[in-house]
Every structure is written in C-alpha cells, then in structure tokens.
Amino acid sequence: MIGRWAGKRVLVQGDYAEDDDIPGWQGPPLSLLYHSMDSQEERDDLTEHRQKLIAEGMKGIKAPDWSFPIYADISREARDFLEGVCNVRYFEQVQECKDMVPGSPTYGQITDRWSSTHWVNVRPLAREFGDSGVAEYVIDPGYSVQDLEYLKRCGLDPQDVMRPPRSGDWRGVVDGQITLGQSRVIVNLDTLEYINPVRFGQPPTLAGMVRQAPKHRCLPILKKAAKDNDYLADVAGGLFAMLCHPKRRGGGDLPANAVEISSIDKERAKAARLFKGAEDVKGRWRGGRILGTSEIRYEDIPTTEEVIETGTDISDQVIKYLVAVSHY
Image (cartoon, rainbow, N blue to C red; front, top):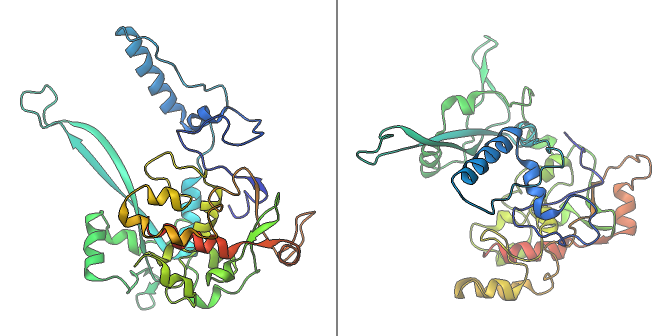
C-alpha cells in the first residue's frame, strides 16, 4: 500500500467533470470517467434500469460509456492500513428505510438499505488480562461524555474498539515512534514545488503525516483559523486541496479565493481577507506527478534532501489557504 502512487498522476474526480478540465489529458473523457468507478454489479443494475425506462416509453436515455476498464477500489485496503498507523478503528452503521405508507403493497417492508462509515480513536497498545495471552484494545481517554454519546448513536459497538487493526499489526504506533523514520516532503515532480510537514507542525515521517496533527502546535497562524477547525491545517489536507479542481461546482466544493467565499454568505465573507497570498493554491497540482520523497535514492527519483535544496517550498501558502477555508 505504501508508495503505490508515488510519482503518479493523481486526480480528484467528480461526477460533474468536464472534458477540458485537465489541459492535454489523453485518457478517457473526463465527463465519463466517473462511471469507470462503477462496479460490474452497478453497471448491470443501471443498464437494466435504463432498459426498463425505454420499455416504458421514455426516450433520450443515454447509457454511460463503459468502454474503459473498471477501476479497482482500494479504499478498504487504505483504511485497514490507517487503522494500525493512526490508532483508529473504522466501523459501519447499517441503516434501513421502510415503507410506512398505509395501504401500500410494500407497507412495513424495507425499501432501501445503506451504510455509513465512522471511526474511533483507540490506545495504541492492547491491554492483556493477566498472563492469559488474551488482550484487547481500549478507547482513547480523550473523549468526553458527549463524544461517547455521539459515537453510540453512530452504532459503535464495544467490539469495534477491542479488536486488533485490520492490517494485522499487533499494535499501533506509539508516540515515541512517530519521529523514527525517514524524513519526507510531498513534491510535484513536474514543478518541483513541495510542501513540508515540518512547516505544519507535524513530524516529517509517514506516520507523522497520516496521523492527526498535534493539538498543541507552535503555529501562530492557527490563531486565525475558525474555532475548533484548526486541525484542518495539516499536510494531508493541503495535498488534497492542491489536487482539487480550482473552480467550485458542487455544494461541497471548497472556495478557491476571496471572491468565491464572499459570494456564499456574509458570515463566510468575513474570512475573505485570509486568502491574501494563497488564492492560486487550490488545484495547483491537478494532473501532476506527485511523490512522497525518501532519504534513500531510488533510480532517478529525487531524494528529500535534493527536493529541499532545489525545489520551491510553498508550505506557507498552503497553510494560509487551509486557515482561510477553515471558515467555510
């Protein structure tokens, strides 16, 4: 799992993409690429539904272009890896919708079923019961009563906390180990721009980058972040913002500049001034080859030291942007 995308072009793909979103793109039409993430079962269901609509007399129903292969969904594998490294456990809450319309032929029957995913922090080391060889993990002590009530409403079961991480590791990463590893930065190989975890107040190791940013960071600019949203200014969030399309199209898209956030409402417009010096950050790396560097040379890939010596550090701009959008 680690490094599988290093040096590759990474795309944040939405269902509303347009074909010219990435200049010079030679792959499948971007407006159709979203459907390449449909499983074979989903494709069959949609085809069946389309044929049913046509049979009922509806015209102009177009089928998605599925001439390109199905993309592999590795979300669960990535999630399993994070369980061990970040000391979290993911759990799913299955919800059902029933037909409660009196007189309906399907009254009382389940008409829809879906699941939502949540996560909970646990202590990195398991607790053993005597010398029995049986151990279990315990929940992180930092949760308040209100937090625990929320997690229970989300469907948290004691077993979700007690079980070992799905990655198979016998324990998580303890605090003293986070800094033990190769120092890394995240670089765009096409522009040699990079973001440095150290500038975000995070250890520059892989464990330091994927874990939540420390609560008490010596980062003065965080005083300008929205209350309780300063955690958004981390290196992982910065990378994601760099890959997104710069223009807002959907309701959940982040604003890219002062003009966009000002157009939402008066409350958010107060944060417009914070975009100064960071209005060209969002989407700046889209379509580029992205690398998490290493201290050890591998073929012609630049090392961490070489990137820092020859590249351009844009960490401060990225932090400014994340502080600004924390008010979104």
